Image (cartoon, rainbow, N blue to C red):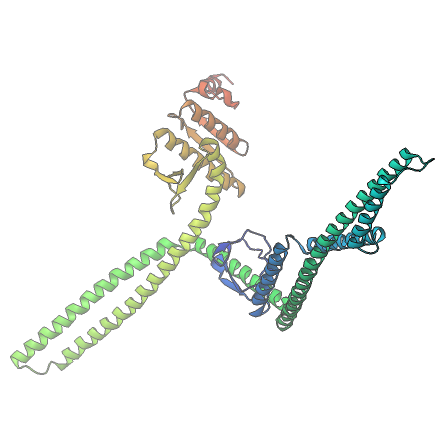
Amino acid sequence: MVHFDLDTEVRRDGAPVPRGQALTVSEPATFTLGELGTVTVRPGGESIADSARQVQALRRELQQQLALLGATSLDEAERAAAERQELLQQAASQQELLKAHAPGGVATLDAEIARLESELEQLAAAPVADGVDLAELTRQLQAARAELQATEAAAAAAASELKAAQDQQAAAQRRLVELQAQLAAQQGELRRRQSLLAEARSREPDEELASALAVADAAAKAAAEELEQARRELAAAEPERLELELSMARDAYASIKKRYAELQRSARDLQIELQSLGQTGLGERRQELQGQLEQARLQAERLEREAQSLRLLREVLEDCARQASAAFLAPVLKRVQPYLRLLMPEAELLLDNELQLVGIRRGGFDEAFDDLSIGTREQLAVITRLAFADLLHERGQPVAVVMDDALVYADDQRFQSMKLILHRAAQRYQVLILTCRERDYLDLGAPIIRLADCRELAAAPA
């Protein structure tokens, strides 16, 4: 079981993992912890995944065998076997009933029926003796025939049921033997896989994996704290000063490099001139110039190293500035969204790295700020200011928002939405609206201060 308690995004093999969700890992997996790095988990050695797949294969084979029997589970197959056993018992009961009616078998019963029918025919043809009740004999004859027919029908039905039951018993017995053999083989394979799984866990217990994960989690938290410290240091740095120093160093390096080239040309010219004039005794001057040239070269190398250091520092600061900008941008956008849902539910505000409003995203398309209508632009500007005010207010800073007729081009529906937004913001800090259209804000429910009343109060005698 794997669980990450981090503020950064976690991905498993590239797929996002919901925050706070515990995961069961049965095969090697790589977790990416945002900017903190990656963690690779190999549970129970390399064989546990194979063992799990083999167990799944055995389960699928068991399901296929159950499907051949027309059953959805092992319990249902066992119930079907019990039903077949009950049918066999019923067939045995019918066999006993047949034996009771015809101890000698069906053939003997047929012979007895033929004999009785012959005797009946003889009795019917014989003269009736005096004192014999012919009606009673006829009734007895009909009763005997009815009993004979019932017995014959019962015997035939019992024989048919016995034959069907015997066939079902034979088929069920064969299938039961096959299933028992397959079940025994599958259970043996399952026990073998379970043994392999236990052996793998004995080599690499789950506790060791949990301990390694705890160490990785602690390292991730430490890295997050270091990142936060770096952001605080960036906020305290002076990027503009470093940029000026880098620019000045570049200019100095270019100037020295140019001077170095000029000195080289001058040295070559002097050497050529001396050779052409054949003059000697100027070795001291030559050595002096070579010394100046060497000093210029060393100074150029030093400035090059300083320029490279400043260039690297600028790149690091720019990267930190981008990260800090993103870290500051996210809270602003988060506080813009409640206002934006009231104004344009399907839109998303777009800000650049300088926290300048550059447009909106609607329906999957980006719209530049300059392409929007004047009314939409002034409304977005207002809610952006309110979002910054919310951020400052939540950090304990005193906030007051002052607007001078900032909603001139809004239509009725948008204007009503903007009044709801202003009312929402005014619940947390002071919002002052300077306007010459008092009637438009009457339903806002806010106190109204008229400048004319203020002048009258100022002019009144003390």
